[in-house]
Every structure is written in structure tokens, then in C-alpha cells.
Image 1 (cartoon, helix red, strand yellow):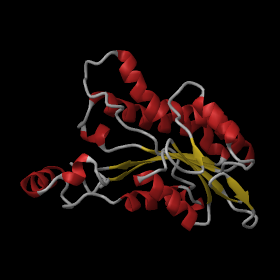
Image 2 (image 1 turned 120 degrees about the vertical axis):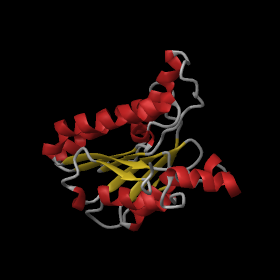
Image 3 (image 1 turned 180 degrees about the horizontal axis):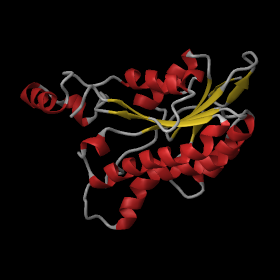
Image 4 (image 1 turned 120 degrees about the horizontal axis):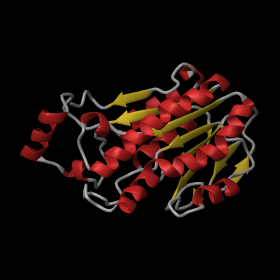
Length: 238
């Protein structure tokens, strides 16, 4: 099956189907493109564009999304949606921290509990998270880093429950990725040189396609022994 813009058309038998959240731009968009290059039929979800337009933050939104999916089995689930939600203050109220947790992990868990049981019954599945190098490096906003740290713990623990049934859960932990209009893409001159010399020995920002290529591997049969893996793709960030 090939799924684009809400239409379902036959494109051969035996194809796998992926669901990618946060797929309107950057890493999510490149992940969707990479999966399609691998002949994986791909459903994309974002607030602004994709197969399905949906804001997944409101209560019940993940459940509503699953109801709206085309009548196909989801074999591969790529959780790209994430961010700081603008919560940058370490001493923000706990309800603000909970918003960050929901965006980075809570939504994904709600989708997992609805879609992973079917993967387990079929004996094959891939669930891939986009994490961050921030928890390892101990840099960035506390709410965001804490949420990504929780995500990585979740991947390790849940993998133990599902890997025996052929469902492999893993994560990619990117470093600083070039995204048009974002802060790091605007750095120039001495500010850029200072940032690279302190944090990125490789001397450049990552391109989203470099992250997507690793996601493509983790979505494949070749990743059958990658249960619980958190793969850094950070240019040797320190």
C-alpha cells in the first residue's frame, strides 16, 4: 500500500507501512522521505501538513489519530515530535514540565499502547524515537533534557517487554542539526566558530538526512539486534 494525502492505493504486496509524527519539516520530513526511498509506505502526521493533519497535544488526540488512520497495519512507528514547548525556566511549575514531557514522551506512549499490541501479534515491528544528545552532555533547558532522559529510560525498559516478540524499540540521539530559521542556523562569524570549537570537533552542524539515514536502518530487518539501543549521531559532540 502507498499512502499519500489521505488516499490509499495499491502499490504491490508485502510492503511495510510506517507512521511518522512531526513530519512537516526537518528530521521528520527527511525520515518520511528515507522510508519511502526504502519502499516503505509512509503515513505522515503534523499540525500543518502530511497525510493527516493533527495536533497531538490535546487529551485524546493520539487516540483520535489512530481512528483516522487508513485501514492498514502500522509496522514501523517513528516518533519525531518533540521540543521544549517554550518552557525554559528550571523553576517553572510542574504542570509546565508535564507539557514538555507530554510532547516528548507522553504522546508517543499513547500511540505505542494502541499500535504496539498489533505488532506483537504479528511478530514484527519497529518503534524509533528521536531523542537528543542533551541528556548525555548535560546541556540545555532542564525540562527538555529531563524529558529526553525519561524517553531514553523508557526505550530501555519497554524494549525488555517487547523484543522477544520481534518488536524492536530504539532511539536516535542527534546533536545539533541544521534547520532553516532555527537559532544555530543563524550563527555566523566568531559566534559560530566559538560554538563549533567548544562543542563540535567535526566542525559543522548535522544535516537532517544524516539522522534520517540512521532511522532508516533502525526501521529495517538489519536492526533485529538493536533492542533498547540509543544511537548517538552527534558529530562527536562533547
